[in-house]
Length: 438
Image 1 (cartoon, one colour):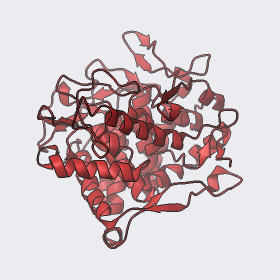
Image 2 (spheres, helix red, strand yellow):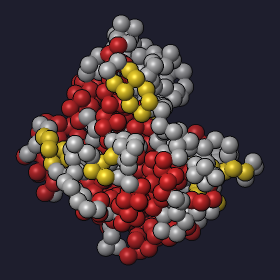
Image 3 (cartoon, one colour):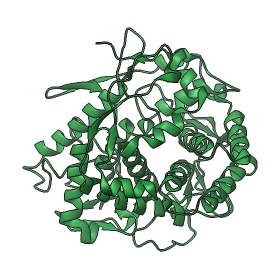
């Protein structure tokens, strides 16, 4: 229990900033440079534990598959397609088991049992093709549902969790062997075209999907894992094959082509702090994600004449449910569908990027709307105080990015576990990542 006692007695430490110069990324460790108040540590303790409960309670204990969405009150929903399992949520869920082990929320023996069951299912039972898995599965039987695709990005988010538990539970030989088998089975070259671009996936009814990852999005984790593959790697130059569109908003210019979550997911596992790409791009992806968060906040502030619930300490829009259905909304420019909905995982997913801004926002959300917006699993997925709409459901990947981002803000633990994988460090070296110049 030493970590809980420490966080209650001391300010928790946020790990960020420039890395100490090394000849190889394998020895590069950023220093501690920022502090946040004890009261914020206590708030994050509660928020993180509630988010973890989603992945413990809303997963099938035998397959380990985590439901894509569930009910806010924590009850187990009916086994229908609406509450199918998501392999992306399962990747977040595996990482949640690692977080829970460090916090002693559940006995480690039980956590390792859940991890082994999950890895065994994906190593020997989960349907897919060439090592990639179907996006949506029945949580109990593991069968394909919704006519879903074999998904490259959702498989990547699953693999990120697989490699995280591989390191957190490294002394468990079975976990390590199963993780090696799952990662080694993925043939990344199968989805690679002549340009060095990866496809979104494949359906047995139509073959390879026409859509691909050819412009900036959440796919950096996919390309990193593909380049790092120990068995079927793609060339390191594929990292530079996709477009990097620049967006200017007020005083900011940054790379962006979608909602805020695209700036968060890869950062949940890959530690980009203090690093930039090879010349001539020299892009600092960590700083880019910080800017994207600041822009999201400013965009909401600039909409407060239209939506008076928005403000400096009440902001955040990213892909989420809304009163009219699921919306992949963002900006800039501001999506004209924005209606005053607040999405807690927008600031929550940026706790590791802009801790002070995100914490002020989340604490204000709970203080003002906690009776309706904060419950068994933490924040509901989305809510609109202007219309008194509060989402009756939780979305797994949204809870996942809050949990992982909070854990990185508290001490960089997810980064530490994932970056211990030697394949990832070697891939970053081959891509050409180096210490930020100047």
